[in-house]
Image (cartoon, rainbow, N blue to C red; front, top):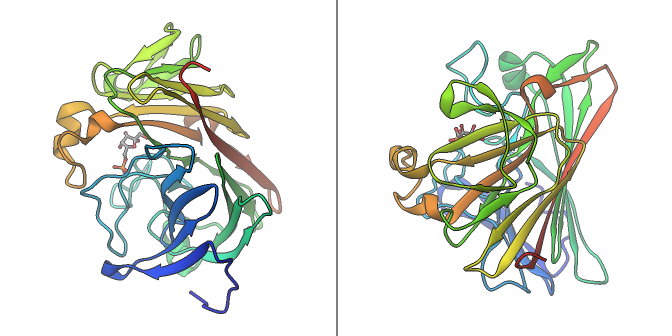
Length: 299
Ligand code: TA6
């Protein structure tokens, strides 16, 4: 990482054990940590909150080339397992590769704007032949805004999937309720991608839950009575929302997840996946954003 980059006093680059590096943000508005590997927002806690807004696992690996468990992994250009090459990593190419830190700017009100970029190289083209430029802007204040822009730098069109795979911190997933998806069709990954319609106004997490909601621009909400707060996950440029909680058995099978940590997280992922994959013409760009806000309960 070029250490010539001018950083505001609220930001510092830290070399972590295991060979990773992260940007530590401590401003009047919030604390956050973004790893250079994957431009991975690993933590976010606005000063208004006694509890973190994002979840990260106490057993996460922080090693070069291994995905961090929690925060907001960046998924591109495929979602889930690679469609034809099982030897390739799940959730695409970019969450375990270093991104370039392009700028860190603090606004008058203490909001910090961090800009990252990543582009193809010989290694990525071996796995996915296209040329691309990704620009990722993270705005850290009392709310968290993440914007991922994809530019097609190839001479031909390409189709890609993407996700901001956001792990929200909840007091207990068994007591939290998810709103905003009523009437939406989804693919149920727990039942071999069966196509269903969401009928619940309030979705309770009562078992392993892994649903790809399609053709939805809806804002989602998590009501968390024990933390006396409602988390709002708004979005732009996204037609897919993914709801995931591994529950007991799946969590126990994950080496980078403590057995009981599944109770402290719910993923609401801002995405374009499955039939909502994006077709991008040469030279074209597409931007997807997620905005995470914290409100008093049910506000
Ligand atoms: O977004 C939900 C999901 O696709 C689940 O099926 C589960 O695999 C989760 O992502 C975590 O994936 P990861 O590769 O980070 O373990």
